Image (tube, rainbow, N blue to C red; front, side, top):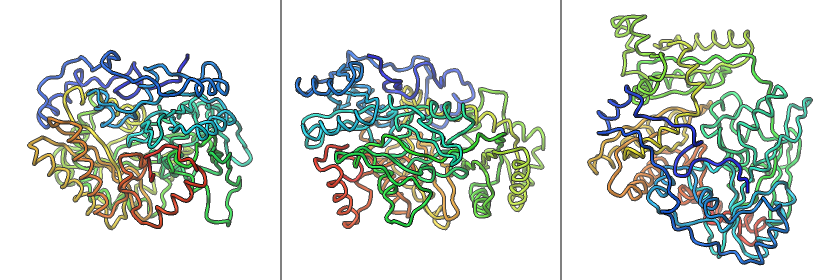
Length: 553
């Protein structure tokens, strides 16, 4: 059968792309000095199916025959490799499990529904026969959201939604588009761009994640300041449940609360499976201008960007890196002739930079994105300059911005090389109010650093402000360190410290990655919330087949 595009097994992305640290001479000494990497062989790890014992499917022949009567001949697979491809997401823990041959759960079959009617019939069959169902979009979950867990059932079916991948309608008068939930980000943007529109939703996983996954996890993209998170883009949803198909009202607003659209968003396939959505779309911007700005410190830069968002400057993106991430960033851009530090020193001179209090590596970098017409960008640039002018800053120009915009989805490939060299690389994110931002930042960093210090392992911890709001911001942490003797046990220990530190410091357990398995024990401890969840779950999924052991199950 022809399987929709899936990423590499045990690694990120497509099979033709590599970060390839061994060919980056500026990055090698950085990793050697700060993380103790001694050698950089150019022999990437590859998955060997012969090393994996994939158990036979537990589905009965009669159940498989009935599924085949619902699906087309090419839309069901029990092939062991296809099943393995759907056994994990793409977290650091997932890649470790694959490489260490410790994947324990596999779907008993993978099906590829092509329309909503087939999806509804499959759910009805699985409900009747007691087979668990796990929805699968692009497979990019980093919190265990697509793990094929059976719960109390004897079998589990993974529903790969990628064949429901069309832009069904564009309403130009309303500036909305009706789009099937299985569509991947690039396919959706191509279909919209052909008509002159964009959704404006660009998460880091954009190239391989699906609309349904964005809806299920309440995703937020890099341009959320301009377009909002996915919840701001949704006009109406269609969701297939055991009880039938439900559509939320197709109106711009209503006073009939509570809003069921909000009830369904972010439920990660535990109430039903999104089949399509009506979304706000926007005209493709005439121009894009991205540039890099430097500040003497992360604290000073955070104050500056707070004022930008609270003054409602219509920027497309603000991405603020702390001093450690900024220092590392300048080792990652060596693939081009752009060297912002060298450029700044040569242009302005060391004495001037010292006078201004800005000198590498002691500085914080802010990537700014402006989009719109020539006149709009000029006006917004002037407004931005006026606010930033109240702080010490230096504009490093548009060359780093063009480079970032071109390569913004490439960085996840770096993790694959890090695993090859015995490094720990994981990320997590949170959000909090402005008044609490640095308390959370310092507490979380300190607690994670202590874990590595106790184990006698080297660590580099990077942080950036990824999404900004009038009342607060999201902090995105990257942990790059040496692996311990038992990498999975080490990950569990670090993850627990990260989760408890975030919650204990007044943050939320996830701003945009979702809950899945890895965060579910830290979400909503309130007994009333759990009772409400269980009641809605029972009403929509009475047999409990949908994504068991996930989210708030």
